[in-house]
Length: 287
Image 1: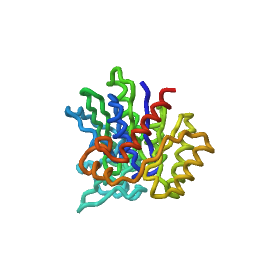
Image 2: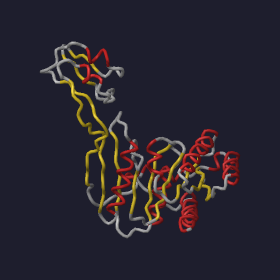
Image 3: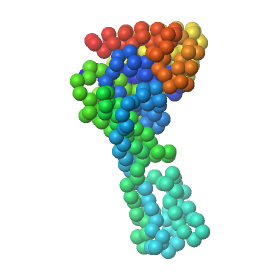
Image 4: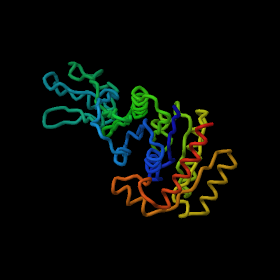
């Protein structure tokens, strides 16, 4: 099974729009949304079955036992994250500020503080006619790279006889992106024709190459800045990165997204461009 990962150097470039269109074009039976901080692929890939939901434990958080606490204030004084709050006469832990370092439990003279496994998010697996693996982190939680790995693993364990897996990744170059890149056959980068878009593209290419993974590039809304588009194409040519196409600015794409549809469901210029990009990308995957 070939695994195609779709990334972008920043948010809002059209990464998920491209992934949703590719899913329609290919009829992919294995899908994963690894943008666990803000998953949205499920909005344009309707599923027939209810998901299997599983808690994700990302780390530990401190909790104070009010029956043991003597209000000595040692925990609050030693917490470098200001996670210990006083409510009336009770000491409590702010779950959003706590980093689970355990200093409060270490300094407490009456063992009133303990670390407990923290439910940092949830995984959802749709295992009907096709496998769709996704997840979401709770606000303020970390370990997104670990959760991304679990999302990919769930997809791989449950898929049967699929020729292609399409993975929608996170923007940027951080931990969730690094976890997404591991083990894929090709990364398609959706670039934005702007100064920041070019800078983000270069950083992302460097990250991908550090994993010795193949990459290709397409440009969304290329006609917004033809000059920057030519600059991106020149960068790809100079660095021997396959350039697979341009997507024009198309208001129909926004209308499709607002209606919960894929651009592939409409007859519009963006759909035609994405179809050509999909076919070119498929040829690269087949090599």
